[in-house]
Amino acid sequence: MLEPDSLEQFQQWIGKTDTAIDTVTQTPIAALAATLDHPAEPMVNDKVLGTLWHWLYFLPLARHSELGADGHPEKGGFLPPVPLPRRMWAGSQLEFHHPIHVGDTIERISTIENVTHKSGKSGELVFVKVKHQINCMHHELQIAGASDARINAITEFHDIVYREPPQADAAPLPGKPAPTTTDWQHKMVADDVLLFRYSALTFNAHRIHYDRRYVTDKEGYPGLIVHGPLIATLLIDAMNKELDNPVILQFNFKAIKPLFDINPFYVCGRLRSVDTRDGHAKTRRVELWAKDHAGDIAMQASALIIENHS
Image (cartoon, rainbow, N blue to C red; front, top):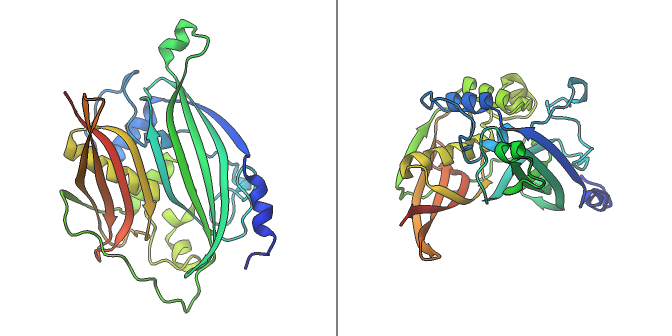
């Protein structure tokens, strides 16, 4: 149970900022492509970075001595020190303004936007919303010596939720059935090798994704948990295959129910409304979701795309 003045204490983090700089190098991109089972292709400067693949950069580089028992960095610092033990990436809302290319220098300016609290069926919950403003500096502009070559590339809002530990006698929450009408549905098997490789690529030491004894004995889950950002990446990957790599303007997702390595799951999508932008390009809303082996929604998402150019 949180102390009455805890929320006020955590809200003092609102407005706190952090800035990170990175370079879009080739190896992480080639490694994620291999992890997603894409065919090998030449990796050269100026190749456009895939949607959501910016998560391969700005990695959390906490020292080993600074990690908690769950493998995450100890709480505090940029994020407020919420005492609830379980934390997860609950969702994101992204707008894509300009492509990022291999070779670019990228900058991420992160700001704590809000800290809220509520009590739900699963107990106490604290939500932290972080805004990430991602700018890029194209390497050709850097070489040319441009005085201000920063380009606003991505605006991302990241929702983090902190939760209480599971109660031994708590009944599982009922699932929400997934839509039965789809334009595509791809079966996924997230085995422990896939989860390990994605953890390694994102330098994510959270033990729920690779330590079976920890996740079952300490966290009370039935198996290894599939990363939320990996599920989101698989949703985008399936859409790109089905719609021949459309231009993605916006993407939102919300985690509903965890997925585990012990069962297959499905990434699904269907096309929704069509709008006209500036009389030249046609945009379409795409509804996306991941469902578990029982047919319940695990992640709900949507994308706004430019369907074609004419």
